[in-house]
Length: 303
Ligand code: CP
Image (cartoon, rainbow, N blue to C red; front, side):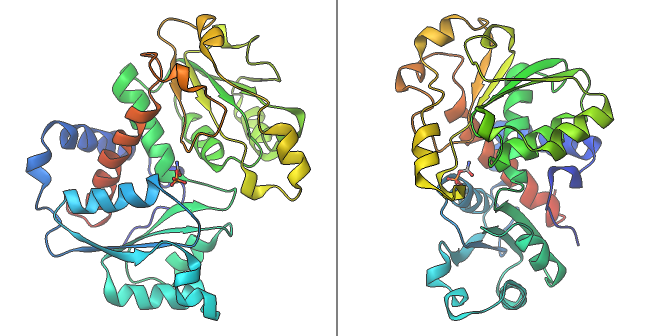
């Protein structure tokens, strides 16, 4: 039995197979419409979500399966003090696979250790969000035709943004990736990530200005300032609108630069950018469904 805790749980060859499967699902959805007949997905979400939970549910329904679960800890027995390890033992009696989001880093890993069914980390605190990374990689591969030889800018909250941490860890395995980290001083990418890049000899730069760097980028990954991870409201208010991508800034960018965002967006991308063909963050959501369908099939050994 296999779980998904980190984007590194799959080799690059396995990722290629997963993305090939997702691409086939996109082209031939009917071929997969009954692959999960009789199977159940449990979505155990201890933290809010729109995309991840609903795209998992949509993915399972598209495969012919069914969905059970809870969308906040308050409506589950966690509110009475039940542990994650007991909850997953119980869920193992009800479902064939589980997607879990939790505010505590490592909670899905605890669940996996006590589970009789595959567990997917659907985001754990400020740590990892591997299925967002699969979504990001599939989007890039589908729209650019490759996952190597890019200069990628990651902009916004690089300290608390788990999607950024997962994406960097996944991209370092591809050739000739140059990272441009664009953030306020207080929200710089954690040292453990820059230490990893130094050790691996991967090139990166850090900058506070989006205007000064945007012209060099092949990909721009915008992120929201993670309000829920701040200890202090005053700091959040000071930093939340530090970057706003607008039409003027897009004029400085390459004609084929793609703008990605894991969403939800708050103010960091002006709505006037949405009609720019380079803005692909809503297409990205659709790729998230295809890749989660491919993941469910792979983990259930039905691919
Ligand atoms: N991208 C993402 O994780 O969105 P949700 O928080 O809505 O699931």
